[in-house]
Amino acid sequence: MKRTATILLGNPLSVLGLILVGFVVLTALLADFIAPYPDHAGAVVDFVNANKPPSAEYWLGTDVVGRDILSRIFYAYRVSLGLGIVVLSIATPIGVVVGLLAGYIGGWTDYILMRITDVFLSIPPLVLALAIMGLLEPTLLNGMIAVTAMWWPWYARLVYNIARAEKVEGYVLAAEIIGGGRMHVMFREILPNCVPAIVTKMTLDFGFVILIASSLSFLGLGVQAPTPDLGSMVSEGTRYLPDSWWLTVFPGAAILIAVFGFNLIGDVLREVLEPD
Image 1 (spheres, one colour):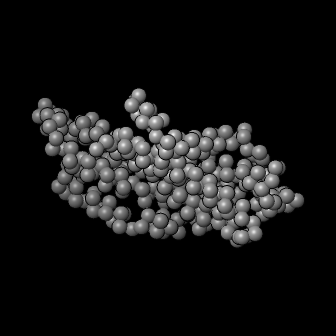
Image 2: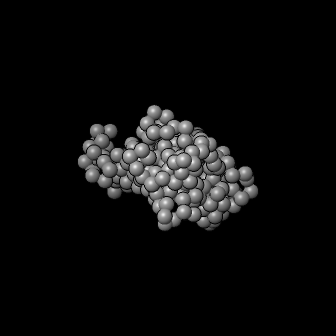
Image 3: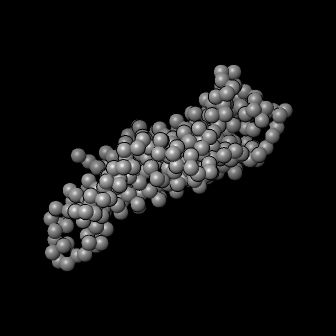
């Protein structure tokens, strides 16, 4: 733990990543207290202050109905982080279990599970999510379902490759010889050796989940108004470019900050947890 902290704090990129992610998390958690106009996260209309550029009163400007963009970005971060947590909390266990079963048991179990996984992996992630959302009502819950459906196969493939390599190691054979059952070997012996790779991938994926969710919202298939969402804010702003540039630039920059921050931390964790 001390070594990990030393490496993280000693790497300028990891420090930058921690700052960016910390900013995103804190603004999402404290949005009710730090947002200049908390009520603007809902169905508020203020045409007197509509479409105002950045100023001392509205730091990032207002949208076409007069809502403060900075306040809406803070609340949009809350939605994005919640989506990322839920999606990875569901997709990761499913992928891990599938990968462990296929990698350790092998045979027909391996063939069936990994062919199903390959089918999902053969479809571009965004296309699969669009197909699912096209069949469902565009709500936050259905958005989570769509993103989860496209994410678990990556964890299944990752854990499968590790489990296949680990099951011939001496510690696994020793556990089998002394009578360890399949569940014990998979979840008590092999799984701990998969954790570093899983944690690294989850950190990297968090930013990509936010990006995919924003892409769905940009296309009108994600979070619906009046709930603030970064993707839908960018989409709405594109209709008023280039004159009202702040409607698009600042929500887009907010997405960049979140994705870039998680990617920086993920890259450093890869070096720490998976040394060559």
